[in-house]
Every structure is written in structure tokens, then in C-alpha cells.
Image 1 (tube, rainbow, N blue to C red):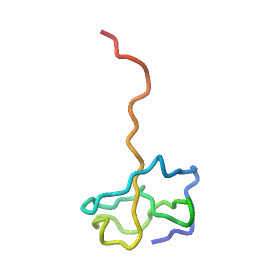
Image 2: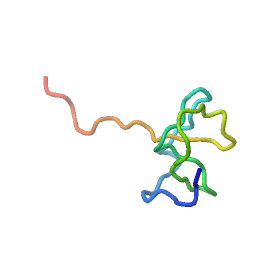
Image 3: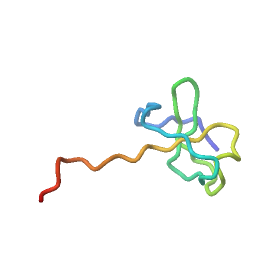
Image 4: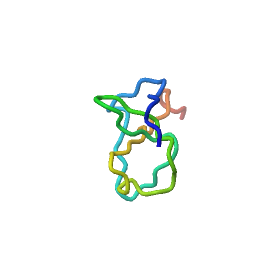
Length: 71
């Protein structure tokens, strides 16, 4: 795992959710890389989040943009 490179997009804690213990880690997840900073996870995939020492985070799913749907 390499946490030396921080994500190019600024990521704030409110945009992330902590993975549950039984969720599988995948590329695109984040790991804490210091105070209020997060790095993209680029290590192996497919293991449970509770198998890692640091907390693993994933971006929150966003609601679709736009207004009301037409009737």
C-alpha cells in the first residue's frame, strides 16, 4: 500500500463514510494520511475493512442532480 500521494481532489471527512467491518476494500477507497487528509487506497483489493489497522473510507453516494421529475 502506498499512502504517499494524496488525492488530487480535496476530500473532506463529510464526503466520506467509514466502511463497515464486513465490507470489501476496493480501489478508489481512502485511508487517513495524517491530520484531516486522506489518500487514495492503491493496495490490494478484496479483503475486509476490519483486517486493516487504519480506518478505510469510501465516498458517499450522491443523489442525482436536478429538480423534480416530470409527471
